[in-house]
Image (cartoon, rainbow, N blue to C red; front, side, top):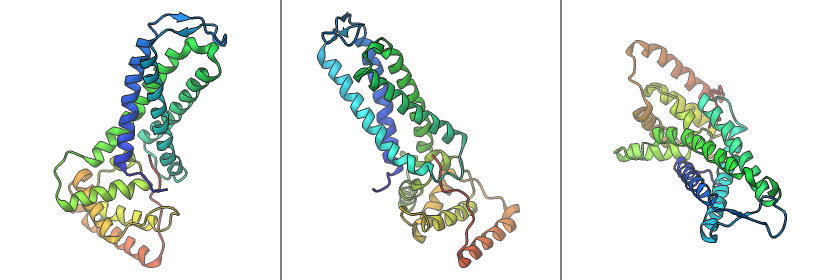
Length: 259
């Protein structure tokens, strides 16, 4: 299964956030209608007398939300097994992402099987909406920082952004990439190391030399710092050591995973 691009995960996060807001508002409106006796007798609190159309819209949006969440899980869970470097944002993002799934499962269980707890649905739905919005923000903000979708770019930098979105995103989430602020020389070294890893991790698309150069240029342009001339000698030494590692087929692990 092909890996999602960073743009795809960004749009899925935006979709889930939008559905969380709309469904929370719909739920608050639907619960204003009085309850009537449940003809099946399963729910002692009765069932809502709300109109069917908005009720069905609420249900359909819930299905779309669940599908988007599952799609993101297929992208995020394999990456979690390769964690080497984690930022505070990625840790919180992961924990709350799991919490969204737990709350969603509880809501579905109440609706489908445990109707006697139906009077708790507004609280469960509210918790789901709030948690989803926090998770979406923790994913959307770093992705926007990395992609800068509205920034004018040269053709070379635009190609570099596509490489970052498609290839770097295989192992690293946006929050991990956005946490790095390095000069061009360090980005060159980092991307060389990631290129080595892309050739050794099963299921990942290798990064070509041209793609690595484009990615390093884009990251230096977007997340870079001004180079310090005083540190040139030290950086040259580190770069030579990396080249020696390339020749010897070795490599040290800066990190293969991140959210």
